[in-house]
Length: 169
Image 1 (cartoon, one colour):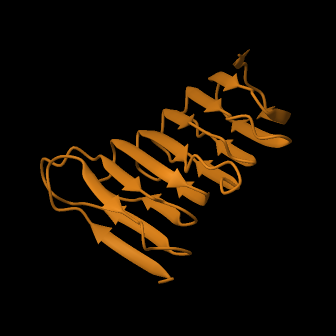
Image 2 (cartoon, one colour):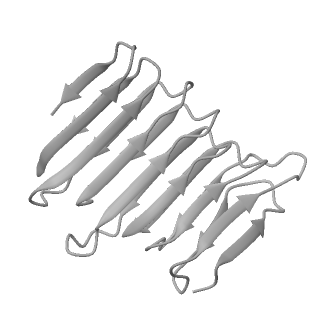
Image 3 (tube, rainbow, N blue to C red):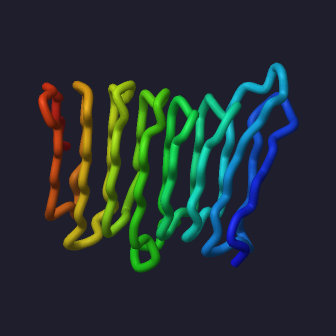
């Protein structure tokens, strides 16, 4: 794949990027458009690294991920959804940016690592019945953590010097 694709958003509403034919690449989204709402959706993300940069300060929605790394950067909320094929949904790593308040993993990944920032107050993760799955949740601020643990056999929650609420369903 192409090493890095820089996408400058030049519209007001949600920008959608279909990564259907993009693999093993880094996708970086930014915008300086006055009035832009700051939302980006990346469809068919597969095994790409996705970064929200300056101006992308609303919702970052990633679908069709199989082995993705997501850097929330300036995004306020991040939601990631696997491709839906258990054999393909290998891993996701989501790292909150300085302004990220919410991380949602709509899951099914064999391995999920979700790392909040000092602004992150909500982290939720859902699994889709894969056997022997591992979920790691890292928080640096008190957060509400929800895990739908169908298939998760290993759960690590790292919450240094904070009080968090963990709900298992």
